[in-house]
Length: 301
Image (cartoon, rainbow, N blue to C red):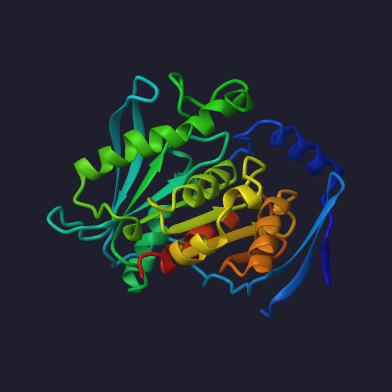
């Protein structure tokens, strides 16, 4: 049984973040796991098999079709401001064709540009070239729903804005996307995933709105992640309506607790759920790129 012990520094950080809803860090065989102490609690869960991404999965290839990145602006009634989002349009994008939509959320220190550090366009272009993805548009929004949504100053002070993004996402951004692009509007063609704080948002909003999202992913999810009993209050409904619940976290990431407690709850209740322990992984884009590479291949299929 492999033990992961949270460091004192990681515990201190997690405790601070846990006190602020919306907290998060800035941007083989099934293996039993016991996550280290978080306060006085311990969590045991079974990790799912780790399969390494192929070499070069995140390196730009020559001689293949490439998608397009663009920035869009939309008016948010939630914040009474015009807000921005980064959009990935797949190779050979055809405005007359319908597409599924993945909403991809950033961490507490980021904004609508943070995911670009993880070259999502390169990863997705390569997967399209290999015939491994369903057709989709990817929306990378700013998850800080307040008038001044720039990640400056004390980013932890804006925790209410991260929770408020639920309203902006549902009432403003999704309707905007569905008006601008020719996309499907049913839940089976809509997915949500994110890194760190955005991972917590994705689990909270995705599982909290299964009428809107059938696919939910959390990469190194932060302590803004709701407790399992709150995320899944109706086990049978979740079994019936959620198609994918997929998580990854680095083995050296002190925030593993947030993912492992949800996985343990799902295992106990018989809810299908994946949690990958990225070997020796930390809280960074090495893990998050791996998350996007894998999650994007299993949605909308």
